[in-house]
Length: 232
View 1 (spheres, one colour):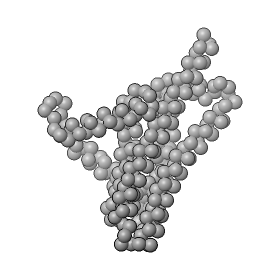
View 2 (cartoon, one colour):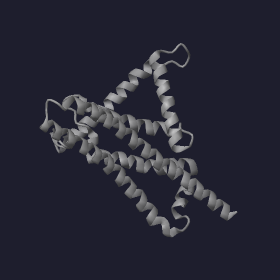
View 3 (cartoon, rainbow, N blue to C red):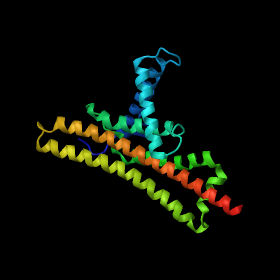
View 4 (tube, helix red, strand yellow):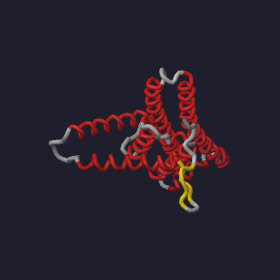
């Protein structure tokens, strides 16, 4: 059992393809294929199938979760949060397939996911306040806060990346140690616990991303409102 899926599988000229990249493509292909297949059976008007009813119930549940976390209209966050959750969830549960190494066990993947959240925070803020209105929040209540605000967002992104990577790494190491100690007793139990752990980690990462995005947007709105009030 490897602790990280970053080993090189093969080379194409100057390009190197490692397991992280390969399994990331596999996950993306599975998600896109599943979405394309599911979409073909959906109907706008009744009667609708059981699969569509189940999917709509799932979407309603996700929207309720987003609303509870952000305290805002959830539909604007659904595409990003839903994609983030499904990708991490698929990466974390596919290790039940022999030979599959989760891309989330690589720091490069978790860093990329954290960077997506890092850029999503200003993207959602700009979409709601406009570019000028959002950038002005970095200079409030005083321009001296600019480096601290930027530093806070960078460190938050680092913490998000390292947290998911560390949790997945520790889970892999624990399973490896237990399999060495008692290979005939623990495999099934640890496989089940690993799946549960993967689902929880996908949920926590998505919730933290929503908290960062919502807090950034809310704080920007408050600062803009204060600035407008003081100007008036």
